[in-house]
Length: 257
Ligand code: PEP
Image (tube, rainbow, N blue to C red):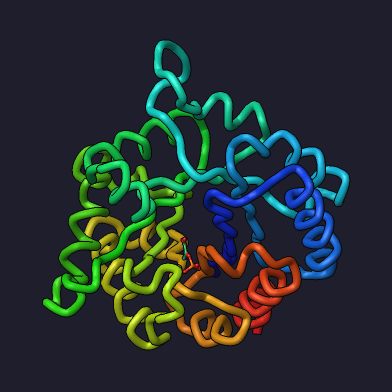
């Protein structure tokens, strides 16, 4: 039985006041939710503040981050390393988000290097994959996802996926309000798990596969009742404490039912 993981990607949103308000709100909202890992990924600049607030709130929330460099120190201006993320209490690190692939031209190979470096440093990669609208319309979704996951499997072996998280995020559904149907998402999740199972049934069975793309409190349960959807990566709706907690609760309720 996989324990669901619901993660909030705050993207480039935050201020000291906002971080305090949102995390104090979330600490209260999630206090009685059991059976789900609830992760928040604020901008790196606020990780220290977030770590303190999460501790004050009883450590019910898990701290994550939105990106990493592939070095731990040195002449890499502007970057943030796994060691620094760990030092600030972050454990779950998003890599390969479509916004980084697009705006920062991150390739499958570069994302795979990040994956390997996070594992080497004892952190949990949250590997984002997913197709564009054009690829979706051309029927290329499974092939795109396979290519993105194989960039890890072919360089590091399927064993690298042990303990990692995959977030299937169709790009056309991110921030658009145009979410994939739960049935379509389930079909893709099953194909991702089958791809991994072809290498190792055991690892396929334990790997967490989140859905991401316009998940809201209103549609969350429809995803979590699907057998291969193990949680969500949430953008916009993670910036509101009650709504994000409702999504986490929907995951806990569906998977504990
Ligand atoms: C995301 O940024 O990973 C995301 C899924 O965003 P949203 O929930 O706003 O679509």
